[in-house]
Length: 453
Image (cartoon, rainbow, N blue to C red; front, side, top):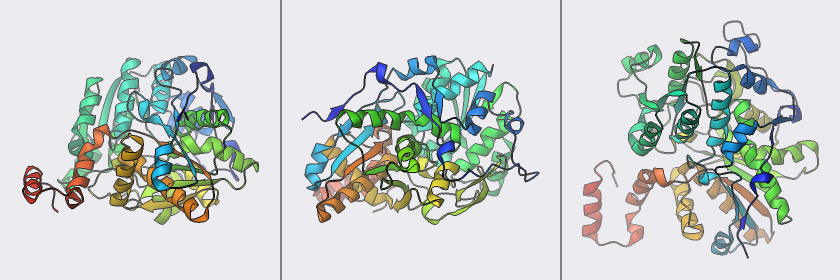
């Protein structure tokens, strides 16, 4: 049987899905931290174009995708859905496992979906430069591609630990003309203050966001752009799930379980929200939707549902979300894209209402799943995406125990070709599994002085 489900370019969705009008109860409004009153469009106009502000607050269920954006999407969209026959065989499960593969996008991840849209709307607004943050580098890579296409300058603050762990992400951004600096940096007041307190700070997404916003508000031709958390980003990513719905319909399937990893919420929302539309309407009350996060940054599973800043310095509006606190500094390990202190307000709201569930995994068990996946399916997942792989495998194994032939779909939101440094550390910690001669193991560690067994 063919393991791939394609859509033609003509079948690409022409509208984004906005979940706001379908939420069980209204989303709590962001607050102006100075007044504690709900923010107005004018409060956001210093850093966002008005068309994106309108999308952020829109109560329209579907929002048209501009034709120029769809034309650029068509370079890689619609992306394929794969039936994971070999993984099913490896797990010996009666479950049917599908995955939506976003790694075929130009940046190697789902982030291009909103990067192109945001660059388009900023260009229309007469903006000349964008500033942003990036953790693992997928978002920075995507926005550098989009900014180059629309002739925009781009300044990126990359979380310092990832800047040095993942140099090839930085190289990719610079090839597209972006200026990339490790965060915290001496370029901003907020960065300098952090460095004065801790010269060896590994950085965080919260710090990098503060630096980016600080620059954006200083110039009326510069805007801030972000890759997750806010509703207009979730809305742009809905092309993933809208395509997946059509693809599963082609083979007469509808999922029992929808799974995606969750850091700020964008790839989770992208796949799950178009399916959640049916659960929220009552048409698919039993649909199980799982957000998967790292145990080292367990926002949904251990955070508090409260108002908090989206950045460390307190420049953003106060957002009602699950948060670990805006001063949270994640451990110095990989998968930086999932190391954000807060979760998207829309995702947080759905979790608080019991419409979705969340679980967390430790890094090593996630990489164990990634190793099994590449051997079964031939694709190396990004470390972030490997969290979804692990959850899908666990659900499939539950089906093995119960004998249920459930249909599972998960979002393989990016490839791991630029994350091989993380996988190298994983191998270094598990060399005994590879049955190598002792002298080979010793030589391996001599070449990797930063790794301790």
